[in-house]
Image 1 (cartoon, helix red, strand yellow):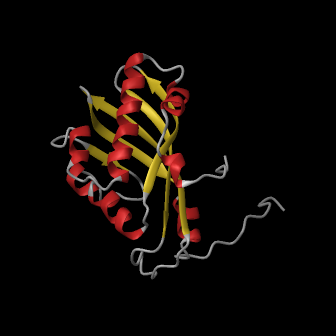
Image 2: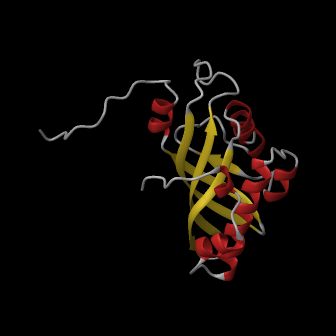
Length: 174
């Protein structure tokens, strides 16, 4: 799924777009997805204290095979803070959502920014775009997020930010 052309305004989801994303979900699944999209608005503003209200901060856990160091809420919270400073205007949006039962959703999301705020993995700011797609599986306890498992397209991100060189794909069976 390539990204369609977008502007920063596309990261402020209209109610019409939110309804499209949540179409087919149960009322509870829609609530959880709206909760996630509202969190993105808070993070997009850099409201680090405000984001606490969306989580069970004492029990929330985070799993990501690319970031095993971010296991608890308060450690994980430093990641969007660092991205916000390094890739302004570090902004997030939800593209699709699926639900299972009364406490789980899966979301496809997009993170956009520009490498202008500071070094990333030893690379000084390049001005290159950051456009990362990722999936998160979210589990809720009550009305708050209690667990996130995320997987993102880190390879493309590192290539786009000039952290690593990546040979372009060829038919591996020739």
